[in-house]
Length: 322
Ligand code: MG
Image (cartoon, protein in one colour):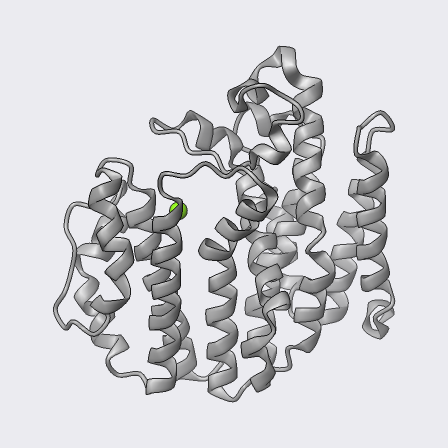
């Protein structure tokens, strides 16, 4: 990756993380946070600006207290990079502000929330890749593709983090009511042992919903041409499909933290350097999930259909067998 592009990607991530820190901190009231979220993008042009009093852990507080350093690096970027970073910060801050007091109810709201927190990251990266000239200009506008990349990762994190999110002091859970409401009366019920069968059906429904993004994610990766950009994009995707396979029909998600094993993660990182191995990783975990589908699961048929569609997309690629 180009040194200047690498720097722009790093600053872009810091900007996204700073906005997310303001969103996540549950100590300030929503009315205090909303103006910060809605104006965050304007701070990028404000040399010396920083923010105190936000962040629940040291590295988050550090980032905001020293945000003037991020602004100073941003100021050295060509206008094309600055425009991308500022416009994504604008959309992300405003989107998060819209959702601060809102529960995620419908599937459309679930996808919209994930778009604000992750789809926009996919958009920003794609526009930076396109602006750098390393990837085709059409990446900037391929919304269905970059949005799927972001939603696939974000939904995986939301599924995996159920217990951490529900146990937080100011619990904020992002499972949409349109899904959990089919199985339990209250979202807290998912963690209760007496509701385990219903909770697993809910979990499997959530995983199936995430798996619908796989074909578009494969299309996105297929279109990348620069090797370092490919690896950068592929690693989170292979981690996500492995994590979904771990979560599917796994009561441990409802009981505590689940994480793929270190050795498995290392293998995924090392294998994520070319499309062929990445396609085979997807196929491996898709088949593993298919084997775990309980015949009694209320969505068994739909889950098998979604997996079959994803596998068709993966296996038809000429690089799959190479
Ligand atoms: Mg957040």
